[in-house]
Length: 413
Image (cartoon, rainbow, N blue to C red):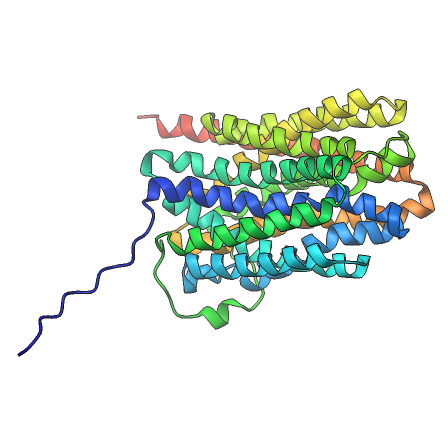
């Protein structure tokens, strides 16, 4: 007797309205983990006695690994699909969390940090594209702001929570990375049950050749955003990579909580700004944001010069608001002009520019600090942010006038 075979059912997946915010939370977890080592590295420097240059390397190796992964695998999810690449990133991040948990020397922390950067680089373009594609039609404008908020908010909260753990627990490293190991396992389960949003395409092996994907239609906009990215991403790097030793040596404060709080203010303000600015035109967000970065770094430099920590914190909030508004604005200016199959490659190019600004100046500052002195080096770093922000203001103001002129021509009969 023949048996009637029932058609196979598609695997159950989360609906888009749940997958959209869920993927943003998972993406934020990568950056929570990236912010977590900030107070821990400062603590380890005191315990293990490594140099300021080694501290800068331990911070920046994350961004170097991230850049390498972006350049090699930034377009991979355009070929394999979003979900497989997101899972590869999560498994790599899980390994890095375990490596952090058992690290007993700065060498092992640097290895763990490099793995973390690779994982985040693999994740960045795939998660950005998946968040945009899972967003309901009436939330598409929010997607860019939400992705930016995930990055900034994760960095800030990770630094704050870890700083509190350093201050109030006996083994902050074990506690934080054991929790993050559990978070990554849960994230793997969640991503497995999200729907695939892009079909597989041939050319996956070819896509591993390092290159940046910039369609002709967005190149001018991308170039106009470079000084905004430089100012914006150098600003949080100041607090995450350079400020902890300044707190200890210049302000005579060595508690984990104050280091975590100082690193938290800017990125968390950026996360809030990324969501608030999403309601306003993208160009205005970029212009107002980069202007706030300029005001913020002036306040920070005043606070450093006068040993006035309150001014530094006010500057951190102002600059953080500017970072969130300007970066979210840049994403929203570009995202509507790219095709679905181009998304991962374009986001790879954007984040390559961003993380070059995030890492290279910190490495240079770490090398110069023993020669120039810590405070003069960080003052010079702040002046570079001021210069980039000033150029960004000029360029974005010119683009705003150009946008207005084009709209005026378009409405003429």
